[in-house]
Length: 431
Image (cartoon, rainbow, N blue to C red):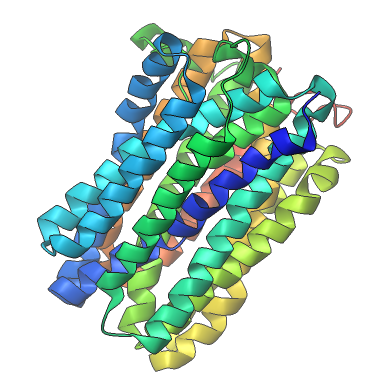
């Protein structure tokens, strides 16, 4: 069993979480500052699409690297150091193209640490403490994101015209995590294969929460055909219906999340209040995840998934209606009420129940194939939603983007609702 001293390495992840917490909001506001509202929104969508799209080859590349280089500390420290370099470089090259490219670089290098962190817990902690350690790792990351967004609130209040300089201290925080990783992490006495992350529910949930793109093997075309085959039969349609609902969910998320910050800016909401709305969502999400596991564990997975999707869908629809009828800074009122419901409570409920279904699928079928298809559809759907979001918002209106995001979630409700309901919460809805 690890000593208390050994467990302290988990806190080396706090500074990097602070550094990356406000990054997406910073990128979108900065691109608008560089290019104006319309072009900034489109470029923000392109940046988010590239960020999500790069996660697919990044997960494949770092997966192969982890299999060949059994140096957990080295990969984690390298990832944090490269993120630090990328963040600081934002300050020195202030072009739109450079900003988008470096945001993609952050996506690529940050994924290098996701799986090694999970493996480190499993390789250095007693099995009886795995669930605690993974929960602590996720909590530290969430709290770091909260602190990072809080820094964004204060910074944009005190130095509203120097948002680009915020990248420098954020880079310093990432470098601090790299140094702490070198000092605090010890290489394990034995190493595990990546497959073990997918075989245990706490590690599986922790890994997908860090980034929902996770490959054990490269899925083949036949894996995709197998995943979506049998949709017409009531006996074999569970898995394809689940994947279709996943596509709709992440397509909706890409659409909404990419245009939400630009919409707040369009309504003349001050930058500190923009950070404040995102902060409120993160605070609620952190709290919701502390109870979501117990809430979902006592109920039917299909039912809880539907409830999470409905809450998120109605919240998106409400924000869309507000964008149509509310003018000016008052838009922040429905935003700060509905966004935490959608991004906090609803997301925690849906994530926990949906990934419980996915975990059972990974265990009961070919782990590499099922997880590979899931990761691919998540990455592609997120990328497509982000790319389309900017154009739809500029040419059809932000309200239309938000309403469309809600409609897609209602479509996901229809699909999930057609999954068979098991007789007990422990039974998988996908078996």
